[in-house]
Image (cartoon, rainbow, N blue to C red; front, top):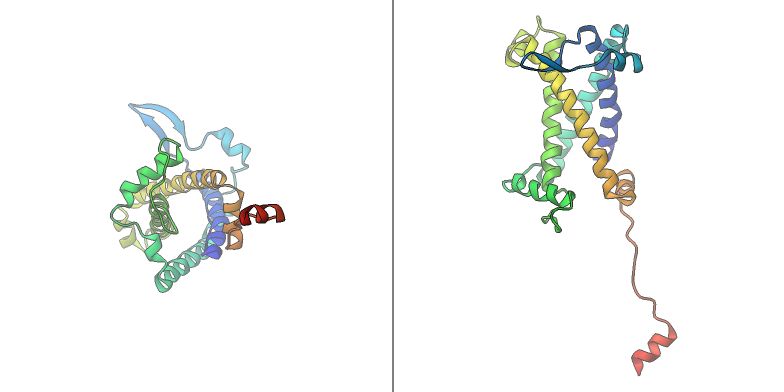
Length: 221
């Protein structure tokens, strides 16, 4: 599970980075309300700062190469969870959506006690299951954008080429938000938790009382 996790992290970063190089070629999306543009994805200063302009072909080459590694890692992860039975600990149950609010309130220090949990709490179950669905969505919409003529039926399933492109872009924004929240949660959990994610085990201090001759004599008395 840890190997899939750590492989997916750099792969997804490369996919987002190369996708931004591709998006530069037709950066049409904005946040517009009642005809007023509040934000453009992405401002020219942003593109220049990250050296994005004029790298369209480079972005496509990286994107279509690492797409295969991203897909293979994702499929292998899903197969492993199914074969090993780990899916039972990951998939949300009926009360997960209700308990997720309690987890959020606890993380915000509004609620003192966290709801009971197993290996993953309710919020983690929802987030980790959602990221799998998002990965599948990125692959399907990406294929629809890449081969719209040859795979026109996939384009149709995605609601058309333009809508497929919007979904693909929205999923990328979703990954960025997931990254930010994920990293903040890791920082809040502390170094010992992060070390456990890397090593596979957690170090717990043994706080047993050491008996000295004085305490032993007092107990006998």
